[in-house]
Image 1 (cartoon, rainbow, N blue to C red):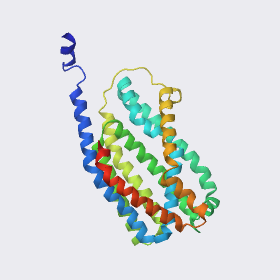
Image 2 (image 1 turned 90 degrees about the vertical axis):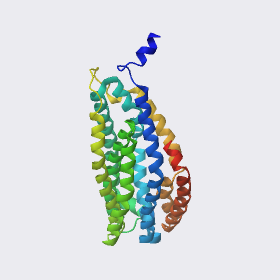
Image 3 (image 1 turned 60 degrees about the vertical axis):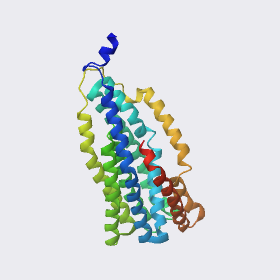
Image 4 (image 1 turned 30 degrees about the horizontal axis):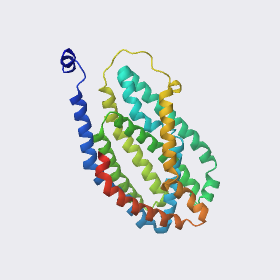
Length: 299
């Protein structure tokens, strides 16, 4: 009986508060994910209508960007949503913020290390991937897009860890509006594929800046409590075991996804237009699935 009284006291952790946060997260996911899926289709439609089969260059560049983002992640971003709350529970705001800074710094350092050789060998890489005469410039602009999207991903995962699904979905909704708007502007101004990639990089920067405030607010709401010095990230074995597991799992999905296929298909076929046809077919099938299950994904 004493245990029951203590569990219901105001000083003990309240399960209804956590239940309410989870319920709100599910509700916002279920309501907004279908709308986000519809708006994301606008980007593909604009690119296909603007470039036709030449949109294969856009497909290959996005495949290359996402490939670099995946290989250099080492499972770090997806592990934040599990371990950031654990550091918060163990050491409060200081421990959570220190862990987030170290994980984000390592993730960006790995990406930048990969971007150096990609930019050094941009011309032969562009020739191999059939990116055309301006391919080296496209790859250099693509580097800004990769960094911007890596930062945005860290913001999203940081918000995920605090059950900030409303902020996450609003940011994703903003992304689905901002990207086609900037792509449309680039097409109107006649900037071509390079302008489209630059527009996506600009969108990633704006979205990261927009997401930083709710993330800072969420971290600022974490109570400050005395705790031991946080374990250095390189010695955090539970984190690295979980990151390695998620990385291997995502690797198994990567080779069956469009990013791998779009990156190598043109070079293998010797005809970039085949990449555009493949991407359109894959995207149409994917959108049917996404629209069917988007509400359930919210749960």
